[in-house]
Length: 217
Ligand code: MD3
Ligand code: FE
Image (cartoon, rainbow, N blue to C red; front, side, top):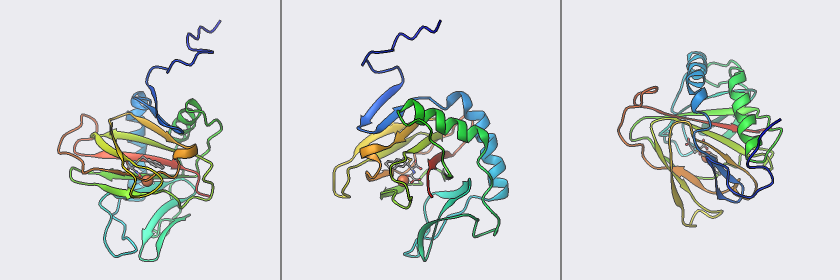
């Protein structure tokens, strides 16, 4: 018999926090899987290296990026879009590792989005000083699917705004192993990352790595 002390009750589950309608923070959800995730990230980066993509305005992104899965998010002078191949190598993005797909589906299900099957994983690498300015994620076809984000390595302060750029934003600390599921009415909220503070993480050194699982097509 399964003992579930939380069934049929509205108390918050431990480690689960609703930041806003549709935005569910699962504290430490990926921690036990972190070593496996980092090994998989290293294999992906060996085939399709991290790079600072150019923006349509001609600047370079502060975070270094790569992708895995059927589609990868890219930015260049022509704009933002998903592509099936890495424009730098010409090869398809590496397949999404099983450990990635399992984590994304498990986290989404926990947050109330069963059956999440992402077709794109953007991998962002931050070093101390790297930031990501306030933006919306709206290059995906299916905006009813959530985005699942996984934080690894150095901590970050996440900015969680509203549906307009000018709306005020909350600041949320995200640490190694935290997973956030962004769906429903939170899917199009503006968000960003403040400059990463200097530090050293036991597993990742002077880095923060963020995985975002998306349904692009
Ligand atoms: C809220 N990445 O890759 S993850 C991105 O930490 C991105 O690297 C940040 O924003 C990072 O696009 C933040 C958290 C996140 C991701 C997608 C969201 C929050 C979101 C989509 C909608 C609302
Ligand atoms: Fe984003």
